[in-house]
Structures are given as structure tokens and as C-alpha cells.
Length: 63
Image 1 (cartoon, helix red, strand yellow):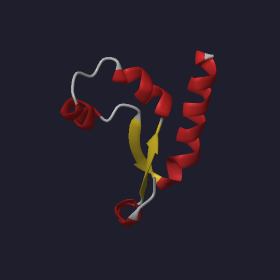
Image 2: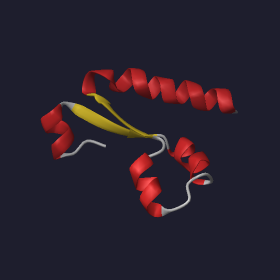
Image 3: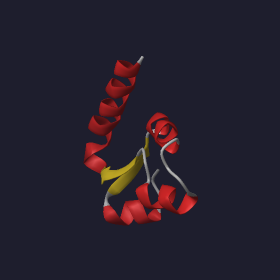
């Protein structure tokens, strides 16, 4: 995700939906879910491609 806050900070937020789905089973309530943000990371924009590649490689290894 790239919104005004991310633009101002030079970051981008990535969501790995599969990691989030798998983590959902272990989270007891909505407040805990929001606090933990499973599967969501914020990285400097210049690391975007590298981090997306990491997510894709990890997903491929789960298949």
C-alpha cells in the first residue's frame, strides 16, 4: 500500500495475505489482530522489489 503517510516517510506497506490467513487461527481477538499485524510489513521504498521477491519465494516453498 502506498498512501500519503508512506509517501511522506519514503516507505511502502506490504501485505502477505497468506501469512495473515495462516496467522488468523492463532489470534484470539480483533484488538490482538490489529496490534500484531500478521503478514504486514512496512519497508523503505527502495527495498520494495527485494521484499516482494522474498514473499514470492516463501510462498513458492509452501506449495
